[in-house]
Image (cartoon, rainbow, N blue to C red; front, side, top):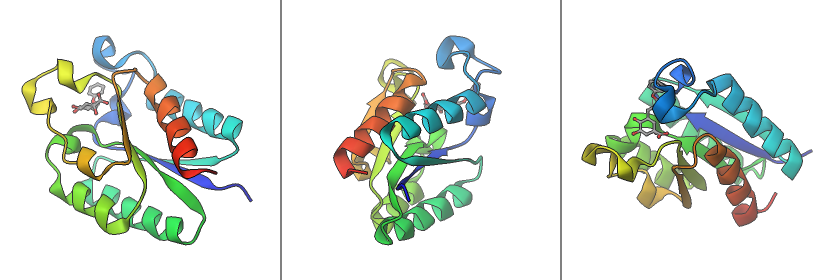
Length: 151
Ligand code: CA2
């Protein structure tokens, strides 16, 4: 059975493609999840996707992913934590505590935007970061995770 990659999307990413196309592009969350599954299929991994607007749901998903990494079923997580990137010490602690290999991805170049988007609580706990490539960044992040962790 093929190994799995978990793709997590945080708050407001369910609005992708429906608002602010100049910043985030025209692709919907459904399109992004299809792109992730296609990328996984090409690389021989199965992709499971979850989006939530609730911090606790994302924390639980990271804990579950960590357990599945230890069981050898999952290779790691690709996560766009949305605005929780800039606020959540709890996400930082969960990634470290669950010992889950995680690639942080942002659609926009957060460093070219408002200063409150320049700091990430997630980055110091991440195995890698993909920023500013639009939704294509999800493909790059999955490729990077598979290269780093093996499948
Ligand atoms: O660039 C990214 O991927 C972000 O993680 C997106 C977050 C933002 O808070 C981060 O600073 C950077 C926003 C999530 C998407 O929010 C939308 C709001 C309206 C329309 C479409 C998406």
